Length: 144
Image 1 (cartoon, rainbow, N blue to C red):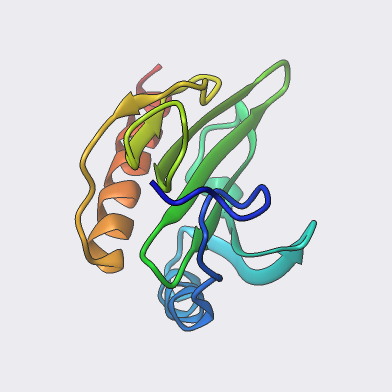
Image 2: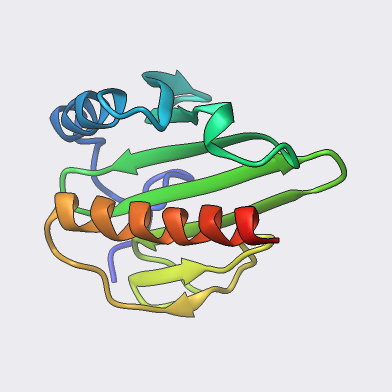
């Protein structure tokens, strides 16, 4: 196993062209209010803010943060903010001491360790999987 570089979780640099592709695709949907590539605390990432009307009123805001590395490691963190709590989960592929390289940190707190999983190789397929799971979460929220 290659040790992580710093606290990024991956020994590779961020793949900016992939973040730009994802930004363009997500920004073109009605569900996304804003998709911005930022340098947050020294970590280049895509920050996605979902459209408020896409969610029931119990959700104050929802966002997705994506880091994609040149070796195809990634961290995709989904977070909803409610009036009295947050609900979050994370899809990861990176070397770590707590799980296999591919793993999922489950809701409601994205706890570590997570559960070992297997993700598609292609970033577009990973994004499709994540967005499908977010859609299922939103449907469950509306059905509550």
